Image (cartoon, rainbow, N blue to C red; front, side):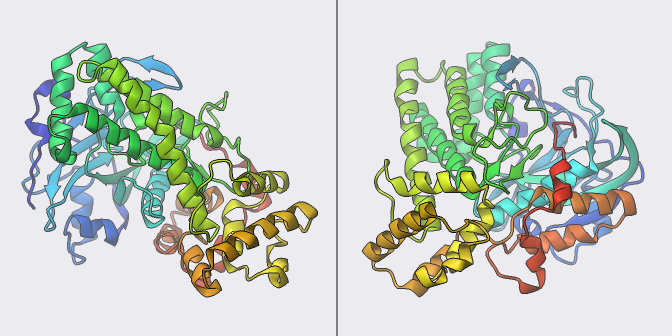
Length: 479
């Protein structure tokens, strides 16, 4: 294994060296062959060896000393001066055969100097959700950290109830967040540390912007805006959009409470702990913009305030442009060029009025073949004058594009998924794992969600809208 460990080359003020503490009675649950390939790990690698490496019981060959990093963050709008990897250990940074750098991090692997009052553990339910959703988001084409494997244990931890501890191994080119810069700008008031950290990030991930901090920040703004557009287009709600959960690379990171839209509700709140709706689905683009303002202030020693303000003005242009492109593709259109185009607004009104299943509506629309096929949409949008008027708008746009129907349908099916990680599907896997120690549903969901755009007829029931009992599922920050 070719370990580079660039982060460990920074001064110790950025991290603490600390060994993982494997949980009692640890056992292997699942691994992602797709993520293993990122590290050039062979398929023949035994689960037993992976268990030893990815609980911290045995060091990875050549990996060096495990680290936990320190950061701060704005949590639900309030600044917390010190957070950090309170239950995560960075095992090292590996260079694969393609020259890509991947950081390997254990989550749930024990106490660190940044655990505060926590026990350093993650519970099985949240570990399972993060493991599956990381890989599902990648398959949907959304920038994300990846999940290599998950391990269970016999160790009990106390949350709202007594639960079993687990570990997920996460991969990312970098786990650095906005909060890392906040810590050194606001808590330490150390401009030189901010510069060192920025130079580290630029050298490793933005080399084209070497020595040009304004250009670097402008790309972070663009990446973040595009990520928010992707979340909105696919119907994903993050749930805890704190600045310490925002990636400096524009990746989806830290899958705590999250949810995909079922019945369309612009104000959907996926996090039971979000009492004010700060991170509701329709607030996500604005929160992304707000978080970038915080990052800009943390970088004030590198970028003049006026320059940051000008760069931040571009956020909404990036977001709107990318969102329009994504929604045009979902609707089978070449483009949506007018910001005031009524086609999208009228559709949102229809979806909201009928609480249509967001994913299933767009999948049905992908198969829709014209006015004579309108009954195909009845289960998602009941027949009405409003629906007829909207479909007439859509048909007019299709005709203007002059794209053959078969080609249009193929394009729509390639961007409108049939399968997403609905909360009730994750809950079924959690219940089987916790109540019956049956982990087979994890593999079924993993296999399903790595091909979200394929029909998979034998898995048809996994595309169904949630059953009635699913309304009682409660997802909170406790993990």
